Image (cartoon, rainbow, N blue to C red):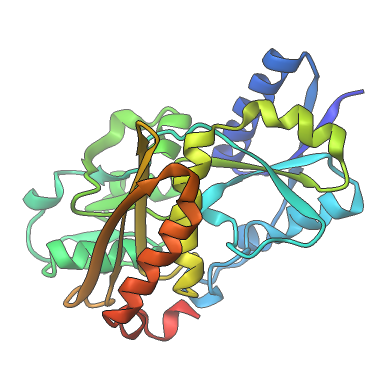
Length: 301
């Protein structure tokens, strides 16, 4: 019997879900069919920052998992709330693609003229970009990657910011004018990785899906998400974090930036990859001690 994989209906979501399905079939021989699900985040016109961000792309898929209408679901890990969901388990975190943000536009960030209009719906991106270019106008936008890129080609905007991994998955990386280095713009926790979720009472399925798991990505993303959880910030908060594992050592950097880009707290730590969650929580505690919570404002809750 085919396994039913629940996915959002956008091109980005179905493309990345198909990549996971194909890999699972290749590794296990099990056939997979995609089941499209419309989420609240797909139909609302509100900005994600107004919704709090957390779970708007996820809850409908989780409902179908719990109801048994689908066997497992694939999410962008950065969309997944940090609090565990009752009855569900994170069966796998896939090997991460490029975690960085990308600028799609007419020029590199440094070369955009003062007053140029840059589109993004992410407070995290806006806050960090304002640190670098406070003279640009940041325009909140929603919609799929195609429609966002279309705002540049139509001349409505001078640039938009999207995840590099997503652009590569839908084969639009040729339109990237600049990849924003993690030294200047830290990505969203978990960005570039995919989360594979199933019911925790499906031991057979958990075992099957475990072949998709990448331990280094799970440790890195776990540390990043522990920062977010300890700061008690939602997916839409101006928090950036990035970790990577080298020779079993996890290196983690995180930042919280005020929305005007004028103040920030940025810190780094390193330690054994096996202590990834503790490293994330410890780094967040150190950031809170330096006043990180005062920078997040009302938008984070």
